[in-house]
Amino acid sequence: MDSAGLSRWPEVLMLAQVVLLYLLTTQLAKIQSQLKLVLTSAAVASVPAAAGGEVQPQQSPRPSASSVGVKLARKPTLDNLLPDVPKKGFAPACEWALLSPPELEVAQKVRAWLGEARFATTPRDLLVTFIRGYAYRADWAECAFVFLERALGWREEVGVGRLVRDPPPDRNLFEEVCPSGPVGFDRDGHVVLCERIGQTDVGRLFEHFAEESYIQHQAYTREVARLYNAANSKAKGRRLYKVVYVLDLRGMGVAHLNKRLLSLIKEVNELFGWYYPETVYQFYIINAPLVFRTAWSIIKPWIHPITAAKFAVLGGDWRKRLDQAGISLTGGDLPRRLPSWKAEAERLLEREPLETLSLGYMPHDDLASLGIQAPG
Image: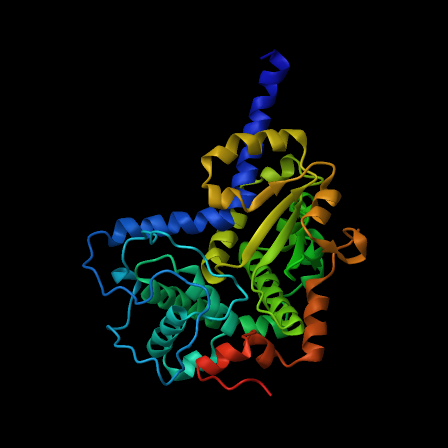
């Protein structure tokens, strides 16, 4: 390798850090936290594993709310979860499929542990993502309950509902310095979101927003996106809780290697990895410079194949590749200015009360199987 090539390696390694911290922590931070649970719980006595087994295609008859009789162990806690060892032969359920009999049984256990009052106000889409997000575990029901309960506690502490109705201060400015928004749909009906990472104005971000404020704004974005998903599911009559991300790196430079920014992004991604599980369908990375693609080729072999498969780094033909992937961009291309999440929230609330939207979407057959009254 010549001297010019050697001089580029520090830049490659720096961009490798950006790849890991900016793009992969949504998946990897959760894995890291779960590994900590393995170490802390290895010496703890086992608790009864959840009934169920592998998720199978929908079959009939489906158990009703009254026919599912479950004998519950004491209310699970984080300390008595089993080591995180995936079940053999596990295959994730299709997101729009009706809840299977084992999933319904887990839902009833979670319901009993939460209590009727809290279960009634639990967003239905989140209930399903926690049930399906932990279906690979031997202690499936216990794990789904523990992490769902923790997420509900966080939502109450942050006041997520209040945030949607009353956005954090300087929301318009935040959307200018951290541009993101919905830009289309894929062939299955998933919402496609774009984040222009390369256009994040790091200087203005830290001039106007403290770390706590940054996290609050990101929580607002994530919750409005969830409501947007729920409205999309209702309009299509199909449960869709996952989204497609288009990550635009145009303009990315040394300023985006700011340690404070990377630390914040890692914290936010880890936070939402726990509180909004099983919600990413695919990442498409566009306008990636050559040095970035070099960094990605170095990093990719280190990453679990299931995680790596969620990422596609596209070159100059990204429009063609997105079209081949069945992604339809509103207006036929990415807009110069991304849609405002604040404006989208206002439109959603004009059409439907926040209390109804916040409950999320669930097919009528699933509502009936759980004994939940369908909305009027």
